Every structure is written in structure tokens, then in C-alpha cells.
Amino acid sequence: MDVQSDKNTLEREDYRPLQVVPLFALVGLSLTGIMGGVAFVNQTYFLASTLTLVSCFFLIAYYVFNKYNNITLSSAISLYSLCILMFYLVFTGGVENTGPLWIYVVPPVSLFFHGLKRGLIEIVVFIIFCAAIMFIPTDFVVHAVYSIEFKLRLIYSFLTITFLSALYEYSRNKAYHYTLELSNKYQELAHVDTLTQLSNRRDALTLLKREQSRAARSKEKLSIILCDVDYFKKVNDLYGHNAGDAVLIELAKIFTSSIREQDCVARWGGEEFLFILPGTVAENAYHLAEKVLRNVRSSLVNYEGENISVTVSMGIEQSNGNRTIDEIISSADKYLYQAKNSGRNQIYPKYENKLPSVIDEKPYQNMNV
Image 1 (tube, rainbow, N blue to C red):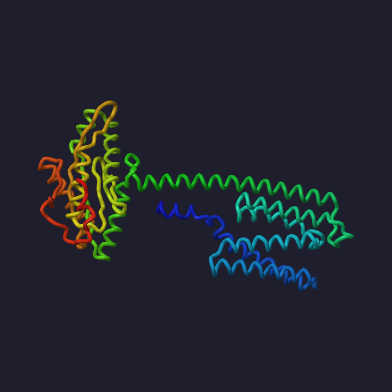
Image 2 (tube, rainbow, N blue to C red; image 1 turned 90 degrees about the vertical axis):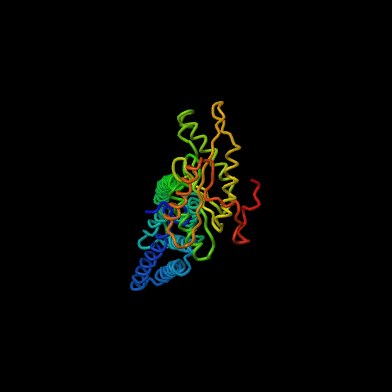
């Protein structure tokens, strides 16, 4: 499965109850509908009317989700309809005073739908109302009569179920965020070079394909620069691989500060870097390459008291819409090796005597190089 799609799914705030809410509403609709029909047959019309009303609420919750994809409203309607039904069963006693036994459904549903904090608040309010109904004097309001032992044990057991449900919800929430954190790390590993924090080869190829397709649709130009650090092996041999890493990190900073916001520079592999320049003709890409070349020349990397100076060679190619990405990169690679074979610290092909062919595409012409 694609890492990005996994990440997007995990980051959805409504991911957890997304499929459960309509299912719960449908099950609630079915059960209350059936129980309402049975009550009607048994000629307990008030119970039948109440169950039918709650069944209609569940139907509304199911409709809201499927019609408007509003999970917040749908879950609220489902949960509060359930609570209303529970209040009725506690008040009337249900069948042979067994109605209060249904209240154990509320804690897991509330915590699952609305999370730990809001869920606990709803549960506290719910049990206070239930206790008020059961303990209110019957000479004040006529309701089902329960023994004091039954009422206390019902509340104690309800609180126990609430505690266990809250513990499960807390554990589930911790596991969810841990999984999300792992997903973010995998996402970074999949698209970012861990040393330079630039895009890696995989991410660069994805971006290059997208930009080439966009350039073909909009008839815009697209240029790339393939860059290689000169004599990088000597840096590793003289100063060690840690020094080589420090050089690559410093070069990444120079490259990043040299490009526009819409451009991208990626670590192509080893000491090679790839610049992707949307909306840019090759002549203007040359202006950028010159700026980068001189910035690199004037920079020193200080590593353990040693000042390390490096240069780079670059090959430029422009996409004309007819070649594949592999062909474009291969062409830039040939120019890169031409620059290396000509003495390194150079750019090929050279455009010093050429002017940009499109006036609007001069983002690099006036750069201070």
C-alpha cells in the first residue's frame, strides 16, 4: 500500500468512527423498529411510540451520513437518541424492570464516537440523569421503582464498565498516535534524504513526472540540472567520510538558498544532485547554474579545524515534451560528463552568448552571480 495514502488515512480526524457510525445507526434503526413493532403487537402503545420515535432518529442519522457525509452530526444524533431511549427505559423500567440493564451500551459508544475527554463528560452527565430519575421520590414523579441495592449496584457496575471502556479508549488512542508517528517517519524515509534533508531520488522522479505532464498540458518549458561534486572521493580519503557528509550537508544548504520556491533540488545519489526547474528554458537554467557554481566556489566547509573547498560540475537539459524522463536525464548526464572531461568546475552546454527565448521566462537572468 502507498505510504502517502496510509498517512492521509491515519491523519483523518473522523477516521475512527467513519464506517461504524452508519452501521450503528442502521443497527439501532433495525432493533428499535423491531422492538417497537413487538410493543405495538403487545398493545404497549406508549413504549411502541417511544421506540418508533427513536427509530426515526436513527434513520435521520443514517440519512445525514449517507446524504451529506456529515459524521459529526450523524454520530451526535445516534448517541443522543440512544441516551434518550436509555432515560425512557430507566424511567419506565421497561419489561419487568429490566430496562436499566441497557445503559451499559452508552460508555463504549460515547467514548468511541467522541473520544476520551468529551466521551467521559457525556457519560458523567448521562449517569447523573439516570441516578436522578431512579432516586427521585415516586410521590413527586411516578416512575419505575427499584430497590436501593439494585440502584447502587447498577451505578457501581456502570462506573466499572466506564472505567474499562475509558482505559481501552486511552490505550487505543496511544496506539493510534504511535502508529501515526511511525507513518510520518516512514513517509520521511520514503521521500526525504536523511543526510541532506533534500528530496530523495524517488521523490524527485515523482515530482519530475508530474512537472513534465503539467508542462506538456500548459505548453511551458521544463529544465533540469544534473550536478556532481568534483573529486568527492578525495575529500573522503583525505578527511574521512564524516567530512564528506558535512560537505554534502553544506552543499544542500547552498543549493536550497539558490533556487525559487517552485523549484526543487534533490539528492540524486551519492554526490549527485538533481535540480528540477518548472517554467524555465535551458538558457535561464544556465543562469542558475552559474550562480550555484560561484556560490560553491566561494564557500568553505569547516570540519574539525580543516577548511574544505569543493567545486561542482553541471549538465543542463530542457524537456521538449517528446522525450521520456529517462532520455532527458540521460542527456543531462552526458552534458555533465562533458563538463567533467573538460576540466570540471564547469557547466555544459554553455549559453553565455544566448538570450532567453521567452521574455516571461527570465527568473534567473538578473541574478547576482
